[in-house]
Each structure stands twice: as C-alpha cells, then as structure tokens.
Length: 353
Image: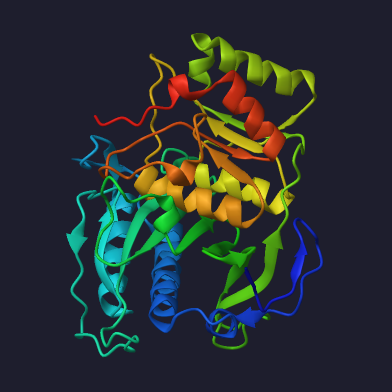
C-alpha cells in the first residue's frame, strides 16, 4: 500500500507538518493524472459551494428531488455548481449521479478533452457520485454541513456487480468555521486533510487555495465517542436499544449533530469512536449507498476503521441501482463487531422506495 507524501500524524494531534499544495501532494504520490484532475475539479467546485453556503438561501424552494425529499435553494445551487465544474474544470468525467438527480447522466466536457492518454491509447475516464449538500436539515441553525463524493473508473455507476470496492477515491467535505477536504485513495494508506485558505491567508500564500495539512491514519478500536443516528429505531429494535444503553453505561461521550459528514469527520479527527444509523420496520434506512455511504466507507477504512451494514462490509454491498439505502456502522473493530452481533443483518436490507 502506498504512503502519502505529507508525513502521517497521530489522528487528532495538534501539531501538523508544513502544508503542501493539493496538486503537489497528489503528484508526489503518483495519482493518475486524469484522476488528479477530477479531484482538483471537485476541490474547485467545493471552493465555490463554500462561498454559496456562506451567503446562500436556506429556505425551501417548493421542489423535490427524485427521492421525494423537499429541496432547499442551496441544495439546488450546490448541485449546479458541482456539475458545472465536472464539465469545465476537468475533461476526465463522463458520467455523474447526484442525490438531487440520481439517475446517472452524461457529462460532456467543455471544452472537449485533450487529456493524457493511457497505455491503451484512450484517455482514462471516471464517474462521480455525490451528495452536493449533506446536513441541509441543520444548516438553518448554522451547524457544520458537508458534501460527499465517490469516484469510479469508467462510465458505470450502478449495476449488480459494482460495489464500493470499485471506487478509486472518495472525498468528504465539511463547511464550518473552516472549509476542509478529506481525501481517500484506494490503495493509499491514510486520509489527506486539506484546508481551503482564503486569498492572502498565511498557509496558502497571497493566492490562497488548498493546502494538505496532514495525513490521518489510525482508528482506536474502543474509543469512547458515539454518534447514534435514527434513534427512533430503538423504540422497536431491542438490539439497537441494548447497544445504545451499553454505550451510556460505559460512559461514552455523545458527539452527534445530525449531519453525516460532520459526525464522521469528528470521529476521524478524534482517532476513533463509533457512528451508526440503524433501522427498523418503523424507522427504515435513509442513507444512500451510492451518494453517501461509499464515500464514508472508503474514508473510514483508509483511516484504519471498519465500515459495516450489520450483515457484512459496507463496501461489499452491490450498487444495484441509485436508490439503494442501507443501515451503517463505522468505528473501531470491536465496536462494529458488537453492532453486527446485537443489531445485525435483519435491519440492513437495501431498499428501493
């Protein structure tokens, strides 16, 4: 497994090595050039989305996405920004799927591609699945929110033989007091943490931009932090109720905001803890495999944690269609093992509404 150029630090350490520009970091670990262009296009889109989040409207806009979720104006704005950058900031993306428009749709580069050519003579191409703005239910109260991206090789994002193991990279984004990227690459140990530095900022020089601060690696197996989602399921799922009670009895510290990205990143930075979103008959699965959970699973595994549905590894679930949803638990090995045992596969079937 490759190692990143920025020295790895203990997760949660306050000291960080000298910042490295994002492009330089990707080049130093020999990321395939077209994939690097996709990652920098996402970073460019995130920079614009961050500005929109700071100044955008959070009111409902009387429209619904394909899943039936009512949209906020900022949801639509963020989605439009990301699609524009996938078309104009890279020539290596050929298909995309968003939580706002889940059926995979073609991406036509503007201008047409003049990309690097691989050994077979054709430019590599990628598909990007993403949630443009996660946590919009808490954005009105100024909580941290985020975006999630999973990048796949080729032009296919769904199919019975496709799983999260096929993803070559994922990106988690948090928009809060700072705008941060967390980048995981298949086969590369650790998760690169990058900071968006405003123009004139001390870390990025007069032009600002993205600086990789450190590489996060290491997930304590039993760190006593927990973020239990979908707590309504404890009302009729005895195993989930037992699990939550066991964390309380063990004096775990609650770290939960209701925004998936923020909650997972909090544990990533702390170097351990457990996030879960269990399901029951009355509280079915809400989190989408393609647009949310694959990105989370790759980041957590790259950092040394474990990601499960309760019935098996999260990244092994087939992406049969864009609407697959499932339960999830990410954390230390022992914590996830207990989730699998007490909550289990009965509540983890992928669903299509």
